[in-house]
Length: 330
Image (cartoon, rainbow, N blue to C red; front, top):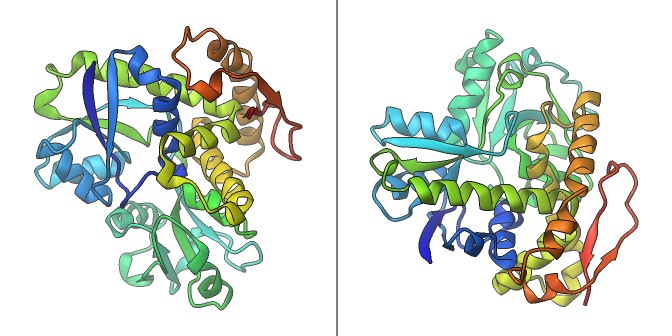
């Protein structure tokens, strides 16, 4: 087995935002490619890019903008895989906000979960002829990995809008505050966003590794599209430090599933909320559903022990599209 160190741009431990790496480990998709995934946590996108180019990890999943900015800063990186067909960042406001266009952000206060991604927001606003001096960046409250501490300041009017990543979109939904997306000509033109990167000098050396990583991620994405609850539960089992306390299990499961759904929706060609985006997301889940459970059953012993057990069908919740959800029995 070839050890592959994956540098995740988050602090401390695995979360649902990158939970599909844990699911891939649990289902043996890395081992099926002759690889062993090892996850490390360089803290944020900027430090993950540096860790990649300094040889402290072999590959790293990063926003395309992070890769381009890192290259401008002298870090030679090459993208080799993406499961996304649209941007996974956008501007959003409270559902009842009077702000309806980016032009309305003039003079407003905007928060971004990771400051390194502010240049992307500024470029999108610049496309609408809004200069950086015409709005104010304010700090994201709490960890950029969650939204709970943002609820109060948003409702109190201390923050007018957010430039968020898709997992925070899911987290806001789990917190009972579905944010409303603002249309952006620049953002909605993006057809490739979240990528997996390798240090440029290692492209030839890691050719087989890159192919195996891509196939393993494609398999786990397909599984998680139709089995988000099972994917989260498998992440919890493979990485026990991600498991919640028993008394909080139901809330955290609901939150993690929403976050995972938001990440996987990057496979749709339109942002959440558009009719075409919802239709294509449903279509993608239906197509994935034709083979996900079949593939699991035929994995020839590579599945996690609990994933091998019979799968119990769950009734689909309202508004979730026609994809079939499966929970790991036991």
